[in-house]
Length: 268
Image (cartoon, rainbow, N blue to C red; front, side):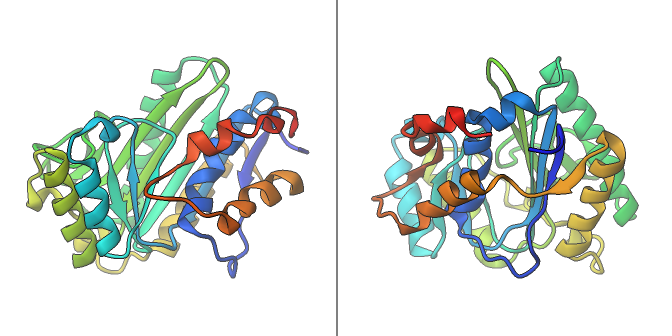
């Protein structure tokens, strides 16, 4: 790796599966790349209808029903690396995965939330605030909402011995299929959800497109953290891409897949 502060770049025409999108941060977190980097950030527009479950969700007696609801709606079911609760999204969402070795994980998370708020405010005149709203999906203190009522951004965190991950989903446009999956899966898992708390930024600023949100966040990370654009090393990208040729049953677990490949520890 050339830079210790890397903004992972994707070709505009590059197609990625939901497995590749969510496997990327899990693989990077376990590789030597993370051990030698100060910050690695991946900002991208999601390309696939996805339900990203957490390890916590798997403990619910309703997980089988929840996964079936998602699959019936043609959503890919994945267990992501960070914690929290499940989130559903499609190409109307922008995802940010930030892996950092900067000390003070919780303070870094709070700082990221503050900067995320400023970026979204620069794109929209909506009354955006940091904080959880009543009965939101994947509730968390670093959520960003509109007027204390509707959630448009959620985040989940993970801290390991050598690094921390701050993973964010910005809902720019929320079509009815995403809304219905969020409602149905939450109900199956036994999570309270107020349907009116589900919203996208475009509900309040119709001119905002996911591509503009990607550009704004990439610019913020370049300026704020001094990130350099670049791609992951070839061996890591090849390994991650290999997942699309594999067969799996039920819900794909990104951490299980990465954990089963000890060679990751030598990849840098």
